[in-house]
Length: 228
Image 1 (cartoon, rainbow, N blue to C red):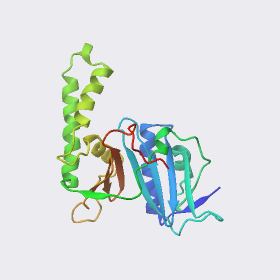
Image 2 (cartoon, rainbow, N blue to C red):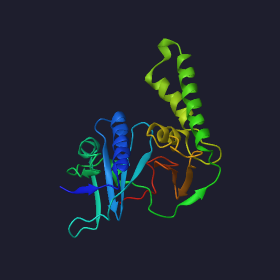
Image 3 (cartoon, helix red, strand yellow):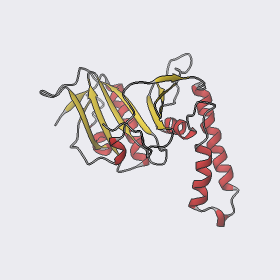
Image 4 (cartoon, helix red, strand yellow):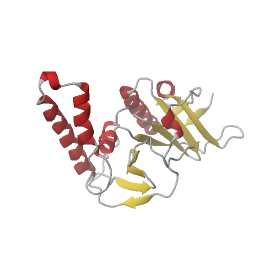
């Protein structure tokens, strides 16, 4: 079994927290792992948000496993979480599983260009709070007989598909970033570290100090995808 040594116990704790949040939304969640050099990229897709979440984890030394200089596998998020040893800052890579369709469709590696117009982190958190409040208010106004799953989904799609300013980034991507802990304030910083928005082809990527959320403008099921 391959054992990865993380940069420190803080990296281990953050990875464990990320995996726990994914499992909260999907007990059977899978994650795709890609390790190269001193970085381990962990990809997951929380249901309902229609985004890919990416947590980059620093390794203590460049990845190597015999003659292999890279790691690319899909594993159970629950098994990976169980293998994380925060005190030792290590994790053991579980046996590979048959990945869900999204695991074969990842954002491109390069070609990312910055997109202007993204609000500050506190404003992004405010956008999510306002959207949640609107969803709650509008669904509570529905008569009991009208409060069906289809009606709730219709209201949710309308609210979460709105974009942030002129950026093209759907509000659901910002909601996902906050729900996964990517938009929390940076400790001991005089102000939040800026979040940055990038685009590459049909993809948009919201990058924060804690992780990234990537989304396709036309949805993950559309054509023009990067399959690796």
